[in-house]
Length: 496
Ligand SMILES: *Cc1c(COP(=O)(O)O)cnc(C)c1O
Image (cartoon, rainbow, N blue to C red; front, side, top):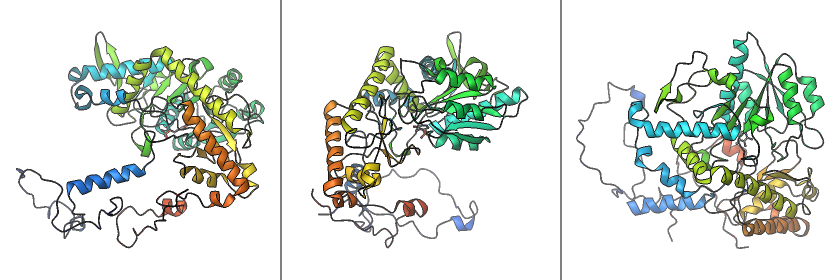
């Protein structure tokens, strides 16, 4: 049988076509004097010549190889892979929202601006902030946007503050964003309970401290109980508090970063607010601020003027525009639909479900793995594979073994302060049956490590390609078809 997945070039037959275009009514142009010589092809590109049906089968086969939330459990901690409700897709496709142009005059896109305005207002309530920008297109860009406002704020006060404090459990984007914004990051070690070590924090907070970046609950899934005191320590020294709200799944309708004392927050709409985010697709990382930081927000701002919605760029202290147009509009529409579908009570139920699910799964798995922070968690929890490592099997091997059962593995080796870390986030949209089936497989793998480690060490057995050389794949990716190099060694599938 012809396999349509990687043979698109091989099934090519000269002269076969999969398209028909109308006759061009545009005059052809001589490129010779318009482009540098070396950019002009001498001969036509060598593309596969296939029929429409062959092409459809090729892409369908490729898409079936991809693991997504629509075809399986995806407990990737710190990534909040929750269901993407299909009503969001319906709304995002309404022509009044999908067929408009960002350069259209404001009067002609009042509905779209109203949606953006309402979303700003709702996210402000959800985060306990006073104003929100929807421009940033990812969590990391939100962080950077927030830190540029931190910088502008201190500069406006005539202060130069160079340090940004980040706990050792922080997401890697936190120190990276601080560096890109021109700060020096200082790592604050966690205490034995996995929380911010207040004494260490006090040692590092001084008049050079621009901000503390914090996730609460942190990436171990634990709530920082001393948050009020942490906030006071930083504020007393004149620093600001930045809340990494990428995963707000545990706090919706329960508390807000504003209540906890934070000045700036970003949210990941592609995580907590159900934007599809596999494959690095478009995201949205809106940033909310307290009133005193409003003048620094990116422009243009979407505002309400009487009963009209307008774009206002008249903010002289603004850090400027951080993204073309008005952010990733389609993702904003999906998040707005999600928020309006659930309402405030529904959002609170989301968080209650997320926390319940995480604790249920934690309890089922804790007897079989080391649990460095065994206590009630929020929306996610960490286990350690150090017990299995003593038997010669690493967390990476167990993650690969999960693929044989059709599960996307949890996040592994993050956060960095847990040895052989497995970080699991089941999300509230999964059924008890799905979580039980996953737990059963995890327990089976733990038993295999003791009784038959070879099967784990050699996993995966059922995927088209076994273990990749991940370093080589990142350093020397082959992004273009070349007959010789694309001869990927395909393992014979094994039935288990
Ligand atoms: C995902 C995540 C980020 C980064 O968000 P991106 O949209 O991937 O840039 C930051 N912090 C935490 C805690 C995250 O989980």
